[in-house]
Length: 315
Image (cartoon, rainbow, N blue to C red; front, side):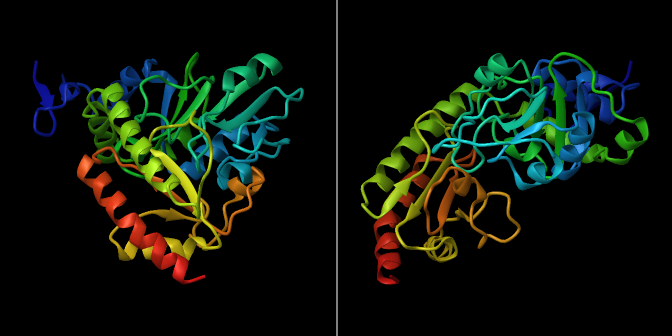
């Protein structure tokens, strides 16, 4: 039988029977990578659509106050308060809840198993910063993934059910399906990740080194704690607003995020840090990419004193 082969041959999964469509190839590949069946993963175009679908399927779900703004707007249930590092500290009698697997701003990992065991609630989990970055899937019955986390296309997202197929109206599913090329790109990028454990360990080492450099300055406060995803670092520089900090880092050829992780304008304050009760003139967020190397760490550490000195002069 004829076979289909896609890209340069490095991706094992793009060898399939000619009767299989590109879409089926991509979905089968990702399902195997996530450890679920093909009918337990639904590709969706854009994250906002994912929130709307899940809010319709699970109405009145409680939602963590440090969730993305799109989720906060979609889920109309109880807003769950968090402690000073961003973990949910409010346990009430709800049937389902929405929360990030790890804080989108600081990387701090949420204790989803504890919440589920205390409440018996179904966990709908935003794993968009998790999947592709660390080896195992987070706890939770329903997961949200985003292909950009593993270097795939930014607009391609997935709803993943660990236990059963997801019942979404067929017409809506077809309307919101990403195109075949984007799905193949997402699947190819996922399979070409290689050893995620090795990548995670390498990135974590870089993160420790960068945090050590940041902590050497009294003006800098690092947010969160050590139980966090390896690639996210959030900090602020005393009395310096986010936009000024981001522009100064950019001047020294270092790209950082500022303000809220999910805000259209990076000058908007972080609703996540506000929910955590953190007083900050403006946070700076560093997301370490998968292809980061030691030379990039060395460059950051080398430029940091000049950046802090310049920002201190603006006060």
